[in-house]
Image 1: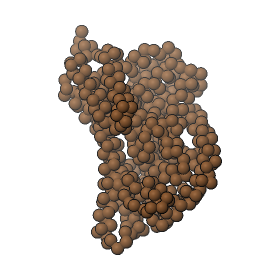
Image 2 (image 1 turned 30 degrees about the vertical axis):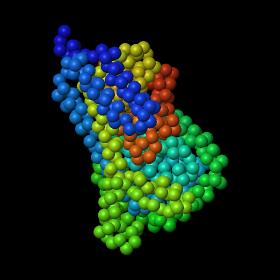
Image 3 (image 1 turned 30 degrees about the horizontal axis):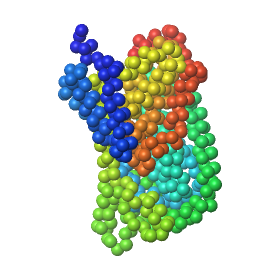
Image 4 (image 1 turned 180 degrees about the vertical axis):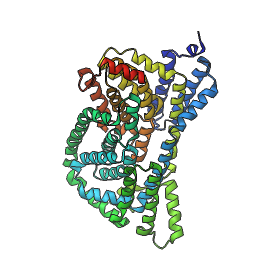
Length: 486
């Protein structure tokens, strides 16, 4: 038996780290009442590494390199996390977020808020191609609006996540929208057109549900309107509200649409907000040096301010105080490090591939092939905590299987996005789930049931597979040609 074969892990051995991780997460959440999953992930990584070193005879140096490589692939996301923390703090102190909340409260009725929030995020994410940018900018303001109206924070966050991932899935500017067809062997535009089949019913289902949920909010209209008036007045008394405050979000959106890099675009939006804040929101007679010191503190520690003792002022303090800052992102960055270390060990040791191949062995037709792809993408999101790996790994695995079934590659690319992209936000320790929970201030498990588009897309995709709806076929000759091209 050659060395490579001797290192190939069995299914049961490969499942040990997974079972350990699930058990540790349950213990942490249920018995220790903690939402901080860094330690369970670190222990699960140690278990996976121990199996690889002692059970599979792999050198520790290989695993270490795999962990560093996995973390390295997420460095851009980590930097974005830090800058988004600064951006949120600066936008609050400068009055950008308070202004967006005031205008939102003036324009949006509680009865249509969830639908409106979802559609606004659809438009912004479609234009920007980024769910993270959408949630970290307009999403933060929408959370403030919805919470003031008395709507459940989980519902509000779910509507924001649904809308944000619509654009992340459908925009030609999105990195995942470009990555999926590249992995499957289809083209960008045929991929986007094919996704319309699954995303349309998922979005309509989400909007319909939000419309029904809004009826309950409408029933509380009289009660919520008095709260809205009080909060709006308190915000206007505490901040100078002017259209100039639209400049930072408009600049960020314009830069992203123009395909400028996300990091400088977000940083530029942060600096612009600081300059506007120095002009529009003076801190009494403190002087320029003291005001700059205040902004430096906000960029690191987040926004802190006591607004007063009235009910409305206390509500505003709950909305804004303690939000943002690079420091608040450090726990998020730690969980990214831990989760990607686990994913790196699982992939390099071959345990992830063994689990995926076991799923592939169950395929018996078009429906089961689609279901296996969807499940593998979701499982990869759970195990590797990274949506890019949830597209790349299943894309490599199932490309040949789809061609052998004489299915057009765009069917595979659609499956990769229907699960790999959108379910990443439903996993609490995935980088996307962590990001959404952090910027919106709502735990992943609290918003997941209301992120209707995110769990409806994979279900619709599986149903299409079994019902043979929009599963485009290719000829034997085309399949052989594509397989030869790799």
